[in-house]
Image (cartoon, rainbow, N blue to C red; front, side, top):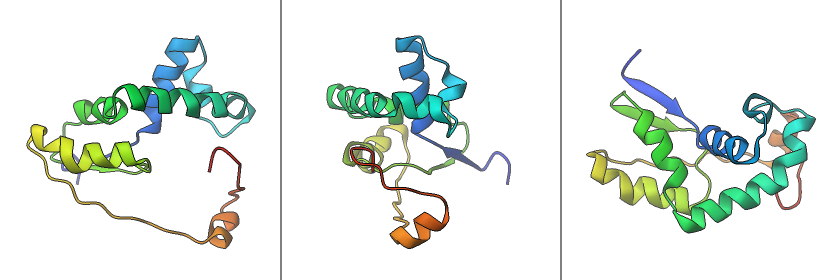
Length: 120
């Protein structure tokens, strides 16, 4: 119910920080349109650089905003993000349970997914 669980996304804070640092439109970066695609490859490189400097950077931005006792991260894919949630959330008094959701390329394609080199 309300207040018991929140869903957090790492991509939101990443896009917000990238937009702020580069003078871009944050709301447009949240879309699936051409604006985001124009910056997507650079945003990925930038995000990896931030994670290399501080592996928990984006994860902490999400965790620090959470007010509920249960937080579901819907888009943790990178090893540094998973390591933060497995090892780093203990300092918040939390425990971590990981669940991997896998889908075939055919199932993903049915949802309009297209493989993009250097992105997927």
